Length: 567
Ligand SMILES: Nc1ncnc2c1ncn2[C@@H]1O[C@H](COP(=O)(O)OP(=O)(O)O)[C@@H](O)[C@H]1O
Ligand SMILES: N[C@@H](CC(=O)OP(=O)(O)O)C(=O)O
Image 1 (tube, protein in one colour):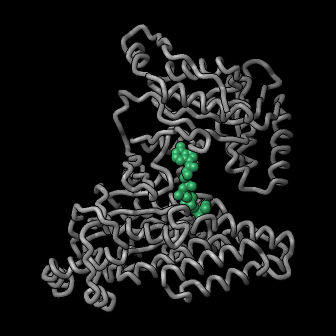
Image 2 (image 1 turned 60 degrees about the vertical axis):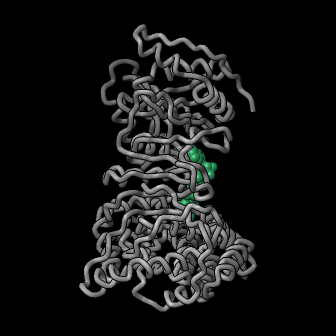
Image 3 (image 1 turned 90 degrees about the vertical axis):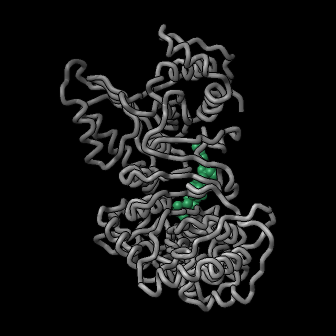
């Protein structure tokens, strides 16, 4: 991974050459121009100036190579090197888009595929607009506050970046027509929802691509659903299908070889393989788009640029003193994402792990911060706890067989009920005749509230045919992601914190080879537990404990006073 080299230095405006570059179609800067490393003087310069400088340098130093390499002999351009995904907060305004363009240009050695999310809170606003149109049957959807906000944001951005309003005018018009349709039908199906939210990514990528082209940097916009991202037809939560990888590789590599331009791809979206309709990959799904493209092209690295310094030791909204985790394995990151850390999409590690492609989580607001590097293996010899994750609003079921002894097949019966009802289970603790488990809220949340309630009723009704069932709601899963080789130490310390704070752990689960220990507590106690656990594991010295537990007697004693709950 390259270190961030900021394009700073003596201002070198080169207007004539810059102008020429705009009209010079072969200026495939990413493909063939060897960018020169940054001068050391640190003077803030605009993106425009950077491009001018790149163009000057390219023309001054590489004219011969360029001519012989691509044009005279028709050789293929150098391959694409990495994916850079920028989330909604990274492209929330014209200013942020300029900074992202700057950032991309500050990696002269990279030939990246760019994946973008919708601008800022656009996805939320689109969903809200859809729901209002459906429920209020708005006669004139142009009155919808959310639609007005979306229009204003995108038009202002276009204006401030100086790109043509025609870049997205068709989309804005179509969006309004779609909302009118929803209002008329008073219906917002999951399929319509996915089509509705797709406007966010379709517009952000078009604006950004037009802006790069305006700067003289050749870029090409892609809608993921036209580019080979093929998914199941599970609207609002679709899965990537295998056919995606060859299709995406063929399309992106083919275009790049024949006419190099930075691909700017819509994150989050796909195309259902049966319906051919637009699908979405679940909230935060652009991370998955990025890792999918990384695997499809066999790229060197996948970068996901966020608004935090990397993956942190816990959610900074719960505890602002959370620290950056420098290294994670794919397994740790997947577990962390699955158990609720918003920073990564739950499925996003799968393609990266399959392709063994490192994922780097970086902060677009603070590019110099080293971020988090996620790889296949890492040195765990000193690792105890990596991160604490909280999943709120979880439903727990306590199921005890009505026949108390030796009832083989009991667990199989319980799980077949969940299978039949299509409900995923998260955490399980079991004996031969009883089982406690939590239900995966992400699968339940994607359904309507009423549907959720009746689904829970159905589960209980079915289970009551073979067991006594207790339904416990408003629970939280606190997941301790770390080194299971140190599970005794982790558990000792965690339970000490819980006891000191008077919290009763209602269920605990730890797999043999997993990187995760899950504790279930009441929702109302959960955040305070996370803060106390964080303090205990990350803000006190564990080295003595680690040393003692390694050196033989198996007993680790706590030397630091344990914190009590506080808000
Ligand atoms: N363990 C964690 N590490 C880092 N960020 C976290 C963690 N848990 C929750 N977050 C939240 O995730 C946010 C980043 O994820 P997200 O909003 O999806 O990023 P983006 O939209 O830029 O892709 C952060 O702003 C932070 O509030
Ligand atoms: N825009 C989509 C997809 C996404 O990945 O967004 P973000 O990268 O901002 O989390 C969402 O809000 O869910």
